View 1: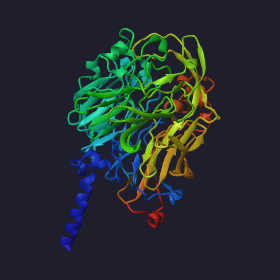
View 2 (view 1 turned 90 degrees about the horizontal axis):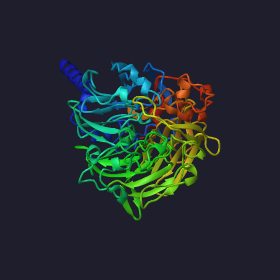
View 3 (view 1 turned 135 degrees about the vertical axis):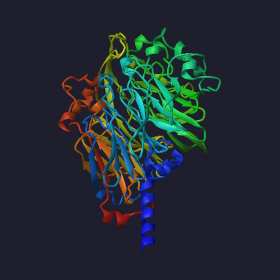
View 4 (view 1 turned 30 degrees about the horizontal axis):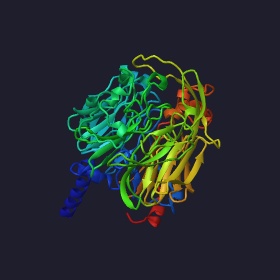
Length: 604
């Protein structure tokens, strides 16, 4: 009997000791392919946000129930993706960026960490004080704070291991993006394109927090880390120091191109991919030229940051079309052969399919109403301007589609290898635009435009749709009253999940688009749903509820809905939102009732 108890206690001790530390020697790439886990905001390096779990599927998702909840304590925009490693869920809130570790099955609080960032950061955050999530690797949790610090924590205890300051609030810099760890480097980019900030991507050593390299978006080649290995596909991008020559004198120093979105990584090609944000100010008359390397996609080596190729999608950006959206890495049959590509849902309204080895644009098709341009020139890689919609100081240009937030903003898509479809949460809004002169003062808004946004054709302002990148068409679409600002999730059970600003969390059939289940949350949803297996062997789905971000600021702050150009013009498109929701701070975790789960469970 004593031997048996010693044996059982040894097993229990091993299980308790496992936790995140059990994966200290397992590569992050391997961990991301374990569908019990969700170790990074995009689930995997390819940014698919796909999980093969099928315990929850189209036949039983209608019985999904709330399992547990947890408040992060701040009623502002909740955009973070909950991470899960070995049965522990990690989540971060908006400013002041508290981090919580909880039992993924029960919600029991394991530890919390409070970084206490500088309160002044709130005053220079463009579009709410959001945080898009954490990163995990090698027994550590990595956090970015609004006041420009990156922090490493022990995943088991929450103890701070190091913190590094990366930017300056006084210049208008903040950090809102989720970091990504690649080959021992923690990759972090800055925000502040509406403040005259100069964009950069920085790599830190994950062991020490020391800066390994920094690649600026603008400036001379040595700053952008462009060297002999740089091979852009398009000839126009092959000149020297284009990050200086395509700007008025010294304007590249305050020209934007921040890096606040998503990063992908291809281990076979050993390249990271990311997009850069808008050129500044919005008044394009003040910055003649193509304004490289804003609104571009870069491919770089993770070891030293050296650029391998780049393509600029919106030369001389007229409409605030950041191209920081995700680059989803897939293989597609194109022209009779399998091609390694990235799919980029452009803010400019075009769905790009790009060869990820060379940077060649293979196709670019409008996925929403587009009047701001007339298509994409595949010979040059640039959009074809629409002269009727070009902005000028003192001139009001009407009916520009998409509006400044784009046909899709930061909110990430999900890709299913089972259906071959990309699930796209996005907005459907247009705008009127008037440019005006603006002066630069460090740490203050540097915009130079008055914008009024409104719902696009048909009267709806949002949509959740499935896109077929091979046929280059929509497979199906669900219209929503407000912009769909949450991320997407799709599973092996052929269920896709998304949330709405008017408080609905929805599950739909990934093949048909039929709504199978919905839950009315306490606040609007702009978070990123994730799924995982708890310590009890059950599949869970989690999402943060708390309206905010650029479109939701009207509902969680003191903006006047009658002032249409509030929130940089977004108020006009969501004037009715305060009638549906107020701010929130709740983590919602769902599961099937245990009997239903047992009777409908598929193979794992």
